[in-house]
Amino acid sequence: MQNVNWVSLSVFLVLFAFITWLGFAAAKWRQGDLDQLHEWGLGGRRFGTVVTWFLVGGDLYTAYTFIAVPALAFGAGAIAFFAVPYTIVIYPILFLAFPRLWNVCSKHRYITAADFVRGRFGNRWLALAVAITGIVATMPYIALQLVGIQVVVGALGISGTGLAADLPLIIAFVILAAFTYSSGLRAPASIAIVKDILIYVTAFAAVIVIPIELGGFGKIFAAVPAQKLLLAVPGPNTTGAYSAYATLALGSALALFLYPHSLTGILSASSGHAIRRNAAMLPGYSFMLGLLALVGFFAIAAGVSTLPEYAAGFKQFGNNFAVPALFLHSFPPWFVGFAFAAIGIGALVPAAIMSIAASNLYTRNIHREFLNKTPTDRQEAQIAKWVSLIVKLGALVFILFVPTQYAIQLQLLGGIWIIQTLPAVLLGAYTRWFNDWALLVGWAAGSIAGTAMAIAANLTPTFPVAIAGHTFPGYTALYTVVLNLLLTVVLTPVFNMMRAGQAPVDETAAADYFS
Amino acid sequence: MNNTHNQPGKWSWWYLLFVIQFVVVLWPPFYNFAEPYWLGIPFFYWYQLLWVLIGAVFTAIVYFATDK
Image 1 (cartoon, each protein chain N blue to C red):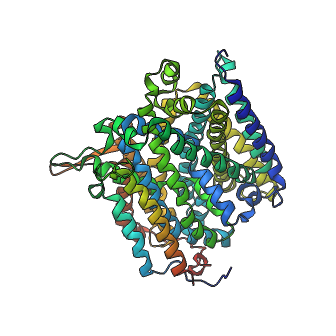
Image 2 (cartoon, helix red, strand yellow; image 1 turned 60 degrees about the horizontal axis):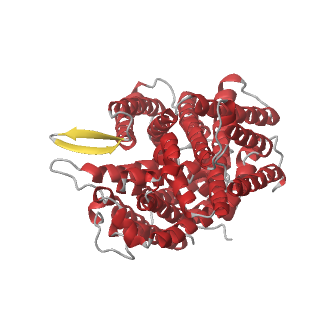
Image 3 (cartoon, chains in turn cyan, blue; image 1 turned 90 degrees about the vertical axis):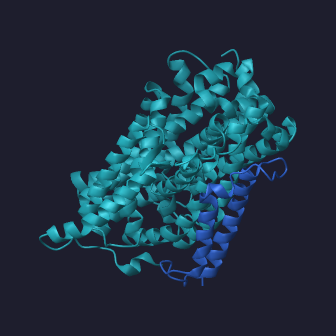
């Protein structure tokens, strides 16, 4: 512990203590009966436009985003900026499709995407597939939030051997688990407000102060190597980096709102109206994310990777250390503590929402569907609270004992899996035309093909599809969801003909999708 | 707050603004250049950041136009 900066650490700890208190106090906020799942797991669907803005923003722009996007810009250059078109195309999707989903879920008291699929298509195996996909895709995502905490704790100079090395992470997670258990979704919703203020201040300080220190944007971009400054222009017979860039942006945007934690954030809004208003207001975060991607270039210009004092950090955390190293290099110690607290707290908010979302899925679509069909409200909420603890413990064990690289690769695969629920969930909000078994076959084919393609591409996100001598490198998730959809469309009439009796009942009515 | 608004499932011509937004940012040949620089920032970067702001304005326009 010889390199600890006590000023930074003190600021960091004070802010952490504050949000811990806030997390527990949140149980009393807009008080409801926390023995009901929709109160614990959706905050009673009472959050207005502003709280939803903070909650969804806190949910989507995670600590990992703040570390990984600049790290990618630092390491790979312009391709990292796909995060910007990605956030631009998210919001029209949110605006158009999700008020429909909110309306139908609110009317039928659905809490998860799988609840909706169960009601819409009347097939519990399809609902199970959606639920399991959601849980499996969320787990590595929670683990990655821990990486964010690990990096900033390491950058604060806290080190040790054996258990002592992991102690800060364990403490952070005990706090997280305790306030999520006691306050449910109200805890991350209230902490998200603090987190966003910290992150905004940090981001603006970074994009104003650091360029001044480095002598302006002109000098910064002059320091970026030419091959990192722009996308590589594709050669003949390939769409090269262009198609990779565009499909990464579009595929990530389509996958994003299928993640259970996004849907939990959206369903907790008080009206479809609040969601539409948010679609216009959330780009405030996109702009910040774009600015943060530029921070990766600041790190190149500042040359932090060549400074001896940060060599150990880069060795341990790789490019993920670029942002912490730059902050240590550029900011006074008290502000370093502030900025690192922003990143650390930024990890707790999504991790809490993700664990709540995963436990809602287990409770509703696995436990209630297959184990205990008639739980009381109290039992149902209690199961969800326990499962949220188990989910977080699983993520903690994972990050302590499995190399970080696996969490990153699993999160990549998670994106490919979760997008396979698009036909049932997102298109299902518009049409009941699809056959339920065709959807299930399409889901399975997309998941298997996606996994195989990702492995064939050495667990990188893009796969070079070759057709008639032309190569189209693109995001595997997007390619495989197209395959999934084609298969579903082709198989729907086939399965409809094979069905002996009546098709299962759609318990939703057309009017349920409107307010 | 009024609760009597359009059915969100219906097509509106205002949604074309969303289509424009998709096309201009998902077609890299439109913006994969360094020139012209603005405040020392290459075109590639400031163009996309500018579209974040325009996209927000478009979404707000669609919100008000379809929210009767």
